[in-house]
Length: 404
Image (tube, helix red, strand yellow):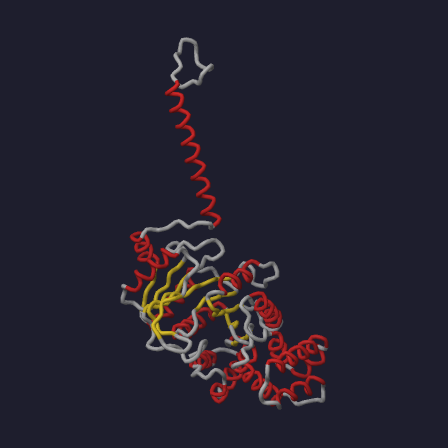
């Protein structure tokens, strides 16, 4: 036993060298314990990530990945449904213009339909989604050929065929909760007003006059849309009983349209959330059970919008959100010029994501599902419930940014 000067037992000769060694030992021990505790705290807070070595990453992927051929997407989406607790809102983080997006959306719609997910919250304005729903109800393909941007909209054709097997209250519908792009969506807005006028007989009400004024203009400008949306939204809310009786089922559509953002904004997640909250309120009065949703959004929205939906006290789906990412490896994409691209995840540990890409690129399979966060070390607040991986998937880019 070591004693310091003036505190040793009688007869014991004090050794200064041993005293210094003991002091250094205890200082090192305390520092080591403090460092380990600090490291644990930082890991919990997500300030740093605990790297997995390359062999360990490969072993983790071998254990956690479920792989398949392109025609086996349903096997993967069924597995997702089976291992995830049932949710109210499934938000998928995509990179735009990849063919895989529409294929995955249809597979998920079929799988999640069994859990009562009938509503698609879309990264589009509701005037465009209103036309989607008109096609789904009527099968009139001239509606699709008139949509902007031009595309085959083959996904909607598949959804319509799927819907025909179910009663109307269990059929899939699309709802726009995002911004209207003047380049495309004002054309769709004009077409939506024309459709509503075809089914609603005018009664010389102020909103009839307003709608007809912009409907007959043919081309709607940004300033036109600002005036139309402001007056439409004010009147619909101030005189709900009157206009709900007049427009019937189209009242909700007009209210959703007039609540959308006009023009793109970089930080628009709170506005999207406000549009979704209105949508939820409207659907909750019409659907037999609490509405559930599937949404495909640019992957950058997963953290902000996904977190608002999951944690905000005002969120109607608080605590019931699944956040799912997509990683593309050597797949065709491009807003203008087609090119093979590797993109997708970016919020996890960069080294782990690089190892994921390298491992998957060396495989022959084209689709895979990675369940959980174990292999990628996502930081706190950006974790994902699962990741779909597309490896050399598709032989071309999508026809438009959102639909093929």
